[in-house]
Image (cartoon, rainbow, N blue to C red):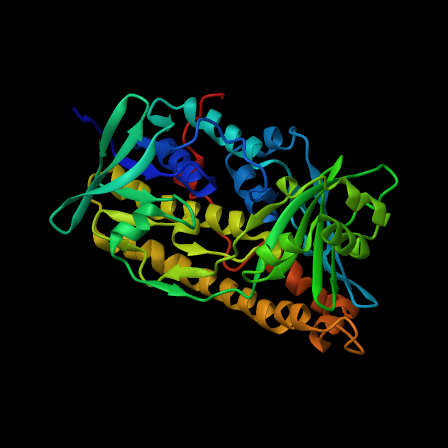
Length: 415
């Protein structure tokens, strides 16, 4: 028999958007259930970038000090090698931010902290190993979600279901909401290389004709993203490990021999890049936020930041109507209206970079003559006042959100 659990809001997906929204709503006094299909948060090559605007949200919640006790690296500048030219494109230090850096830390530390903070609240329930499988409808209205658990099927019923189950959202497929596909010309191969104390500390990228590598400083290792033409993963593996090691070695700003630490293609994790969005984020009783509402390109590493901003906006709009039992469709529409413009503008900028820089670079011939960065990129690198624009767009984003005072002011137990 199906076990039925009632609450004020059920959230499908325990990633950054789902956990943050669950914590904020519980902090505002709503009975919340967050469903997470895995037994823990320990997964490699997830979004490990905590941007300045997310750090500001954590400060507003009183969690920043504890967050920064976890091992992390502070990325204050981003550098790009484009052909023979080295460009300092992003410097967060000139923005006057409380936390003028990107904190690079394993996403599981970030999620575990929010989960512990939520667990200290009496109305927050995190159900691990609970995989959302099906929306439950009453006519046109969504009234709950069925999830598979080790104890069997569980039906969580609530006035609102929020889909935060990622870019491959099963609930999004079931919702009947139309999706706009923006596309991406590339995929990414993730892998690690050991980092030595004598290596540079900079997070950097290297764009060469036909090839591109991004290296993120993770303390004792480099988290590397080798960018490939869309759908060419099989071509890379067919060429063999030695060819891949040689290509990576040519792009490294450190000793090329370090690429030999890629022992097999089992060490290389492919990411299929998708850029899409829902044309409408909601229907009666159901709302999508985060990757489930808009899959972002990895450009700028802004996906986690957008997810957190969505969660804050949703909590600010929905907390009081949910708590007072007066949730209406207009409230769901208000969340979408608040976040639609930042999402679309950010995706438009990502698509522009994809098409004007990355696609051109990947299609360039190795012997194709002079290979230089676009004029706009050279101008931003050379003029400090222009350099602040990408720093702001990446670090803060379009229309950053702040936790509403009535949520901040709630008495919070110590995790």
